[in-house]
Structure formats: C-alpha cells, structure tokens
Length: 127
Image (cartoon, rainbow, N blue to C red):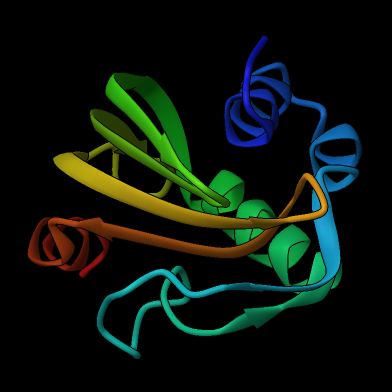
C-alpha cells in the first residue's frame, strides 16, 4: 500500500490537485528551501498554501520527469530521494535536479513538507 506521500504525488501526476489536497492536513506547512525571490520557495500554509505552491509550479513548468529512486519511512516521517527535469514554460529552458524530500505525517495526512533541490539550477532557469 502506498504511503500518503506516494499517493499525493500520484494524484498530482494525474493532474488532480483537489484529490491530492485531500491528503494534506488543514494546518500543513509546505516549506521548500530556496531563494526567497523565486515564487516556488518559502512558506506555504494550509491546503490553500499547498494549492498555491503547486499551481505556481504548474504555471511555470512542464514536468518532463519526476522519479523517486528511494523511499524510506520511520515513524511519522517519510523520506524520498530522486531526480526531476522540468521545462520552463516561458523560455523553453530545461532544469534538472536531484532532490531529497522530507515529509512529516499527522493522522495519515501531510503535515510538513520540505524539499531540497538544486536551487541554483532553478534560479538560472527562471532568471
């Protein structure tokens, strides 16, 4: 059985953001690490914040690949390691990055989300 993070990502990949948000706790915090001048980084609170983050990602990028190499779980924490490639919609530039994802669950829902990626690559692609 997939964990809630796997299910969340599968729903996003299927283009069903509302169904993905059903797996997010009402008071969740999505906190992708990166430069504050890029709209894909910062502090996104609650389901509304998560929706804003993933809509922004969808507005800026076409995802060409998003692959998880490793999953690990301990207690209420889920870890993932993988790689992704996106095409910037405005310029056609591509950005590739490895990533590490750390998610804390509460009552089976996503409560805290952090992703660590090659922020310099994203800044260069969006610059």
